[in-house]
Length: 341
Ligand code: PEP
Ligand code: MN
Image (tube, rainbow, N blue to C red; front, side, top):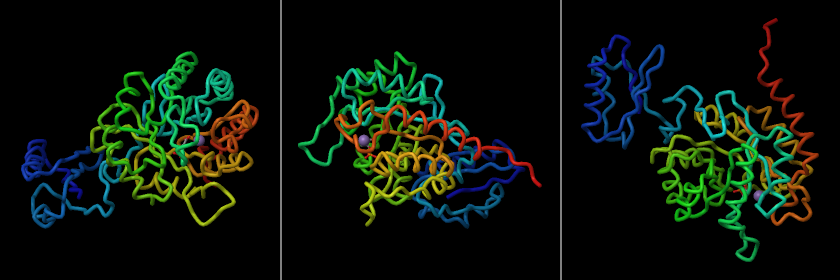
């Protein structure tokens, strides 16, 4: 629920109003804009009578927020959130970044891949050290050794690193080692214990959409993280499971503008897991860029046929370089100021 406060209200009146709400067990989020002050009321607002609020002199009007999320809601926070991922890399609010690297950290080739993606314009380095595999017999990742290799490469090249954490018990190690962005994978999108745990850190989170998640459920996942105190959340569309079998997943390009409309959080698109095949990755990347994504996450491997995971969807450094040039052109077209005729 949102109370729009009258222009004429004094600071004392606003403080009293906020106290009145908080005394009733709700939390508040005051957002002072140029023209209006909004007081977000957080908690079970079914317990509050909007007419009582509207009867108060200070209140201009009360709006029920139909969406079940508050902290991530653009209605409360109209400006885009800009997430600072470290090494001077900002995402959102007009800052577009490309995260690239192998599906899994495999060893020494990481540095080769990292150098190539950086030269092509990627600003963040990805690589899984703890891999969520559908089969328990599939390669599970290098673990902590993989984190060290990733951090070494990121440090050497001045790139923030993005890597998946799967277990709430591992979050501490990721943070201590200095991982720049904690990725929550599709299979853990509704692992609420994990979401709460990363919410208690101040490390940016890249939250992927669950395979069968609705857009609202994805945003509620972000809400879990944010309600624990961590506001640095980026959402990631990575394809959803549908009846289609020609691609690994179905890329929901609609989700990009819908998420940007509903929330103030940066929206990243992952064309690699969305399509599952190298031959389609670039088209999906272009579509996401044109749709207004704040960034892309793309899997790149120096020798895809030898990759330990997801080789079928990896771009070679050459393909990635070509894609980056076209992505830059698409960004230009999408963000250009067009004079009215
Ligand atoms: C990944 O990024 O390597 C990954 C496993 O992605 P997702 O969780 O989207 O499947
Ligand atoms: Mn992968």
